[in-house]
Length: 501
Image 1 (cartoon, rainbow, N blue to C red):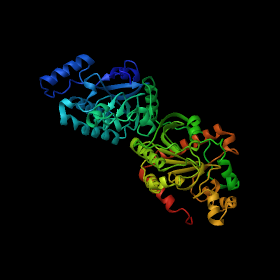
Image 2 (cartoon, rainbow, N blue to C red):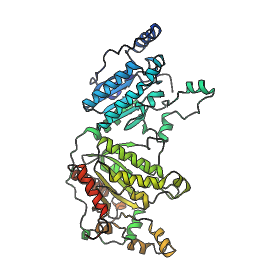
Image 3 (tube, helix red, strand yellow):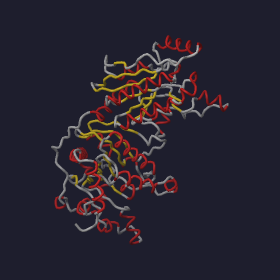
């Protein structure tokens, strides 16, 4: 990237409401530098205009309070020593005490070499403080500026619930200059860039400085705005006799229409706020799913679901999609937000790669994590619900289904191939297996049916608004229940499926 870098003050001014920043910084602790190091510190202060490599404080974004930590690269390359570490940890602990979300913006070469190993191990202290902040169910947001490397990236720079980076930023563990000195060759081109890490599912997005304020605003709406659920919309149908008696095969055909709306359209037309996230955060991404923080009719949630627009027979859902689902579950748990899951899949991948990357174990882990999750959960069968990939997102506190949604162990053609050795009996198998919404409601697999007014593809916006309203209504009804009560009912519900009432 070009030589000009975003200063800590520029970052603060770009993100916070004008005049709202209040510094929390005190005189840096004395690290008893020798004469040479003392001179370096004095020169760094004169060059940068700040007294250490990090500034901390509190301000507001559209009136909502947020704690802030910002590195200053002009002060010894933003390196972290004992004094900088103490300032960071004190700010994190204060944010935790005051129950504030925290926005951190590192830009650093890593550990301050003048302080050696003592500086190196400060990263443990900072990571521990971040972990305590997150354990208090408070949001931790990270914006990586150019460059962010070394121990800073390998500790508090990589622990965000949401992580974005400056366009073109150098982001990596071992800086390219150090790599070349150690190995006598250049680091591979294009690896340690914000854009590459976003593509690989390590960070959630690449956002220019002028866009970060709006993203933080949307995040704070989801994280700190009180819930005011709108429950005036019509509820889902809970009486089997109210659900139209339409052949199962007709529903299967309708859910396969290319025009049928999916999770992307649900966010566009039913969410009042959203912040899309990307990947597992661990170097894996899958285009068949979507993860977002969102708000529906006055209720905040973590939303995860299968994206019908990203799936095809050539690009089915893989194990990475389920690892991303488990990230959504962790986010919901850490942020104490309800989790909404959208099922809309033609089936998980059946391939050598999927087997070797652990598809079946990931389905199992999703089921185990979901049934034991502490936060309220709502699952929505929006369209096709084929196989283990659908089952992995099913066991929620409340399960809703679109009128033409369906759930089956295999597509009806696959079931026909097993039973009849052909695919021509698919309509009969769809009817016999009880896959349609009316049957799922009868069998107590789902709790309610969202009307489609004939077909969601012909009334997408109206249908999606009904879905959003139904989700908000269910989340509202779950809000006052204890986690223990919800867990007991969730387990009893699936424990008793198929048994006489």
